[in-house]
Image (cartoon, rainbow, N blue to C red; front, side, top):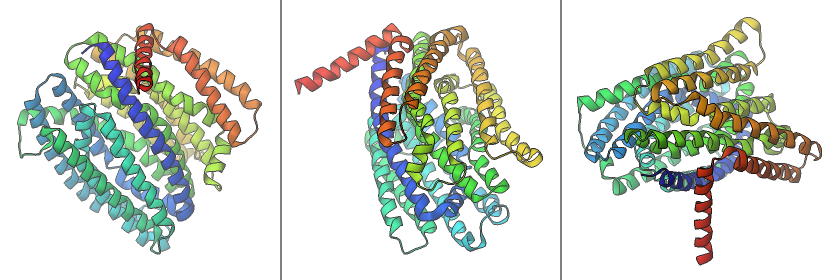
Length: 512
């Protein structure tokens, strides 16, 4: 398949994912505000810490999701659909085994940690235990859904992925209204409602895949060779996913231990905002995942490198246009959003956005590193660096009496190191030129960052703290950043492709 065809399909998939994420972001931000007000800062902190204990087991599902997408995409790229069927069956059996492991760990180590280690008020302990059990079941349901989602992504059928996600987020919006008028314990009831929504979403994913993709009709099958390939890949990815949990969910628990549920709530709010921003870029990277793997399977190195270079630039741009105006007006936006925000949430959120901006520029590099299927050195090196975020924060709290925001400063510093290490490893794995990467990606983006930030700084000084002012600031950043990105960020080929896409869409609209 040609590079032009690849880029057109990626652009189409990105539009679907972008629309999906705008809706999800708006609903998620509104949901956080209402849930925080309905539950209160203490219960909201308890929810994020308790659910975070379960989420820490997501390193298992995260590793398998990455493996599933890689192997499904690779076999589709090779047009080996018989091997694809076998890979799905073996993968599904592995997921069932993981569910059993998660429940065992959850009902032993996890439950012990809830009872003995978490700082939870005695009056809320029963509700916290109920929430934990509901979160555990919810997580098990999510695990079973993952291979179906991986199939949709591997087939690059992003419009379906987007539509199902939209239905899911609409259901979650309905949860808010049930929660506001619930006569039951709201913390427990919130867990029940989330579980119901997850069951519905899982049913939709399975129903669609069984109709559309024959390989997802599970038949008991086992092949040692396939299992060993997936296991070797997953084993190292598992380590990387586990360390990611340490840098995210474990940090929230750490803040709970050294400070309070209120500070944990602030961390949760900041991560909600950062994740909402990050998903704009990660969604685009999702649309790149299958094409990069397929081009590698076909040995089309030039097409793959073009996808990586353009992907890194566009990934960063999709975050930058939202992040910069939000950073300048964070204090106003947080107060507008939450009315009575928890302590430190503004500082936390600003630093969290910087952290995800740094990591966003190298998301396609992470995908490229997994293409050969030899991820041992990559996962071990980057995973070890991620662990330094957790242990550095622990040492800072335990021995140096550091303030809570130190976790973000450490994360930012480690992310910069990880970027350079990731680039060196990708150069070794797929022979991507470091000089070309800096020349094509980093230098243009640095110029765009400098000029757009300068414009934003002076324009921000002219405006008051009002919602209209923020909208004007946001529009200004879109215009300035887009102009800079068009003239500095995009190469000639990409400009031709985008012109062709917009021209085709415009003709279609005019024809209608």
